[in-house]
Image (tube, rainbow, N blue to C red; front, side):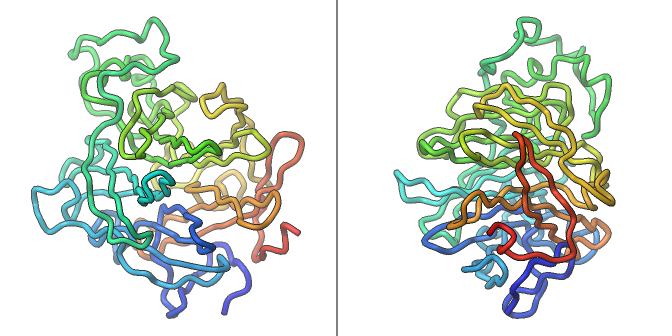
Length: 354
């Protein structure tokens, strides 16, 4: 039995096998934590979805039982989630009204690189699945964000905004109206997370507009689709890997610059409303290797059940040359004076929170 976290080390499940749930998120349900993440295979082939979304269960956050594949990829070549697609950052939330479990993820169609930039949705009546794939789409087609500027509230000439752009910061992207380009077909949605507020309303946060701007979108009451209300956050800041939590009535955010698999300095922000405005707080990491987030990239913020003011920031250490060897970097968040810090420690346990 494990009784501590060892950030960056091999993390065996209860069968002794390294946990295979990358880019994941956690769900607390009926006194049990469920960890959903990308199942990787060996080598660079593991950077594509060859198996599906893996699920693990734990009572204490240290020891995880393998619950199997919650959402398998399809053998149907015509399916959006056919084997060999890119399926990233799965998150699962519970809909109290319907009693169903809803999974969202970033989806890239097989053979199309990162040009599809779609959101995938799946549902299940059981927390561990199997989940049924509902479909994929680009969110908020035909809808302008609530805080769009007058200059960007138009659909530009396609010839002006044509071309393929990398996922990293590019000055040319900042000069183009990507929001307007994608108005009719829906907004790009890459790295993402889900957040359910105290009132039961759920939100989808995702890197959009060629990764240049984060968008925050309200979901419908059944959590299966965008509700048609959304805002742009951190415009032209080129953020990805969003994670969010709510503490004492304020919303805290962790994100990343866009540097592919290579780690960079984390970013943090705070707001009094999930809609913003968001105030950036800089890199929350402190100490050696803080400029590369200790080698990791944010994926989720977990409020620890039953403990007061206890939040765990979850990061992935990517190993793209051998994807299955990716590691997990879980760190306690230390709040002080309206901001938070993250310190790298070789090992720690939940007594850190008192």
